[in-house]
Amino acid sequence: MSSISSVMYAATGQHFGTSLARSASIPKPSLLEFNLRSYLSEYTGYAKIRRAIYVGERCPALSIESYSIAFEELEEKTYDTTTYKHIAKLLEQLTGERRDTDEWERRVSKQVKEQDAEIRGKLERAKKQVSKKDTLQAQWELVRLQQQRGLMDESVRALQDGRTSCGGMAEQAELHMEAARVSQVMGRWLQVATYIQRTESVLPDPDETVRAELAVLRAQSDFGDGKWSAAVTGLRVLSIDTASVFARKTVTPRDIALYGTLAGLAALDRDQVKQQLLDNVQFGQFLDRMPECQALLQSYYDSKYDDALNQLTRILSFCHLDPVIGPHASALKQRIRDNIVVLYIQPFVSVRMASMATALCFGSTAQLEDTLVRMIDSGLIHARIDGTTGFLIKHTVNARDAALNRVETMHRAFAQQAELMTARIQYLEEESVRKRGARA
Image 1 (cartoon, rainbow, N blue to C red):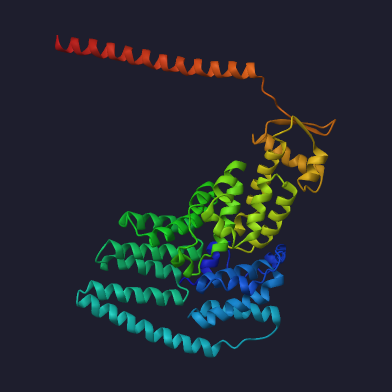
Image 2: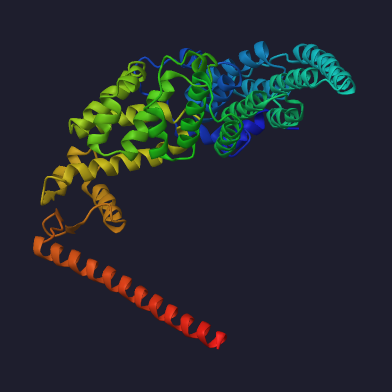
């Protein structure tokens, strides 16, 4: 039986109730006016619960508040007794206060038993009557009950079982869409992509509402998989007016601003950041919900790299507590900083590393040197480090040598084509001789 604990395992690699010590590395976010309860109020159901647990695991300063929010949401909106008791135990460990969960568990268990029996009775009667409509309706009721119990894997299986009762492609598409939504909450991005493909295969021309939700799911899946270029391509065409997508409260306009900003800085060049994000009217509506992202993009484009890096650090202090961005926060920071290093040295033939370390907020020249060595080895920059003078010196390509290299490349390509054509002619001649001999 799979509860929301398996959801958190999928997102974090472990059971959510076993890792309080691991959370010590993440401090409270440094974004101005950050309020955890206000932040989590933008979500509902298991999207909210998952985020609250994720924060509690990673930030000791917010653990009691985040687990309390998860506890309240579980009590008010779910039948998930397993996770409810687990959170109660964590809160008892943190506060020393025991919470009585027995009465709630008895009441909920009774409700679940009654509802489950009623739904399975409906299913049995509908199948005997060979009524696809009633069978599918009962199957949906079973899916909702399993989701309320936190049995996400079981709910996905029930959705797949419902396909045999569908009367048309639209009903099949809705089942696949719901499976994608459940996988989204669980942070299983490959499954999200799979169910998006299945939805599109049975519904090749969806209406605007479905198309918008598929775009959000795909972009979030790409981001969760670390596909920055694909993610920003999908995010920059979204519209904030797609109310039905955000009404579900599993993803918010602020999330879209964060995903698009970070993926854009990781995957796009400076001019593309301007064209596709800063000057994009549709994406600008999302940036209005997260002014910190607008300021970061503007500083990056204006070459105010120290300001951009400081803003990036503040934003990522918050993103470490986001279950979608958190696993990629360190990789994103390195990728964006590498891009800034490339932009910084572009206008120069040589750069004093001590000045560069200060301008780009490195802790020391040695730290910058380590970064430069890695970037040179990986081919991100073409330069050498002069340890005697403390300068980074770019490799300059002589125009005459570059032209000669292009001619040599073209010569090799033509020679290869000529060799292939000669072999082809020889083969045809031999084949012709063989056929004449066979006729003779």
